[in-house]
Amino acid sequence: MARPVKLAHVVFRTNQMEVMTRWYATVLDADVVFSSDYLVFLAYDDEHHRVALIHGGEPVEPATEPRVGFYHAAFTYATLLDLLDTGKRLEAAGILPWRTINHGFTISFYYRDPDGNDLELQVDRFENSDDATAYMKTAAFKKNSIGCLIDPEELRRQLLAGVPLDAVMRREDE
Image 1 (cartoon, rainbow, N blue to C red):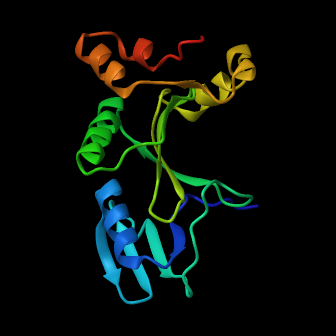
Image 2 (cartoon, one colour):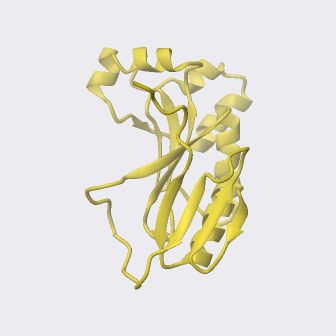
Image 3 (tube, rainbow, N blue to C red):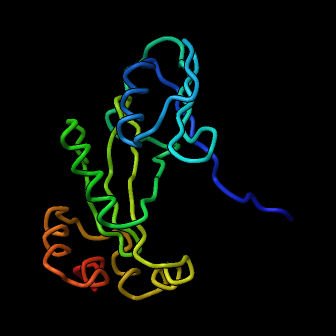
């Protein structure tokens, strides 16, 4: 049986088209490829769109906490420094993560969009998915499959001080 070759895009329903368009364009450094009263396509790479926003009809209050259903979308950066720099850029724009965590196989920053949807910005710890999968089978991961909270500024200090990347990316409980 054939499998998909990639995850192409995520789509959100919203009643705040302008606010959500600005937010996703800012967070992902994306361009608006198409915009109308009921539909927006945003892209940041060679895909024609990675995020779409659809007008959701009658206004409703956003959820205050995740419910059953779709939880979040994640976007991967090439390097830890790229992720840290993006975090600083977003902080300067008033967009702050609600959680920064080292999962062991990724370092991840979680943000909540204006409608209450979670968005993860991450960097992979391992060079390939086989090594990440092997890590997920370790006793350390079984003992703590969520990860450890981190301070992005401490990671930046370690990188700038010359601490090897593999040590900076390692969880404190390993």
